[in-house]
Image (cartoon, rainbow, N blue to C red; front, side, top):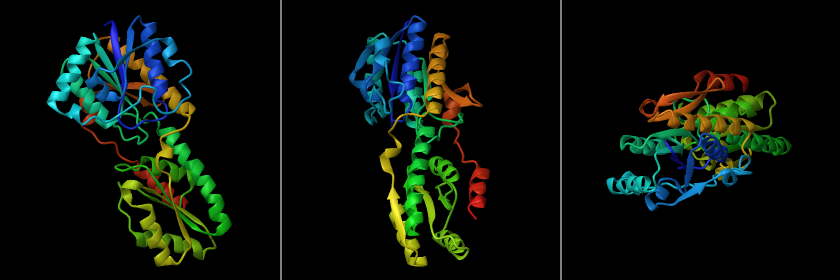
Length: 319
């Protein structure tokens, strides 16, 4: 193998640039040519390939987002789009691909692998919802962004003796809300994985009020409910002065943490090693601080679940 490509796809995540840097520099160290693909699978279809060298990834390890840009491509889901993409890859002489992204990106990687292009996936998503890895690139940074916001909101909540509802990202999974809620001491954590009722939330708030607590913070994943609607219901049912904050895309940006930079570097380098060794249809991950490898079909056929013990612990500590 002499030439490999690398792309980022789907939602951006802090640490993606560190992964790109690792792929480029480890590949060059191994004597490979590295080509970057702009805008994910949309760029594969349009043939938007660029050669990369050591300077291409200078001073990027600390930057959020992705220097290769990212996009979602509906056309790549069609046979016609896939045929165009494969023709462009072969025309460019690219013999292997590294795909950095989430579940949808891995399904695209599987398409390439099934068509005979050796492909390795690197889990890059703030949602941390990829099976087979303890951490995905960007998750740690996103959680720390939320916890920092919680700390600031708690200051004003204390000053005004108010209840705050904070809505965070997590349309299909509550990993961000769960981790940030536990680390930030939220009184209630509402996530799509576990059922909840507004009555239970209000009852918990009332109990806290009765024992003298005059401020509370509730964190809700967007897939579990709308923050403003929940805030209105809480104020209507309890009479507590309630405010709502929706963090939105601030969670996607920012300088990646040391943890995200480290795991991105480990997984990026491992992806190159796998391609050089002739491995294909693989996804790398992190377990106990080390890199692990799974078949892509195994990863896509399983669903990562929230640790129920952490969820119960958060509720216990918030009494």
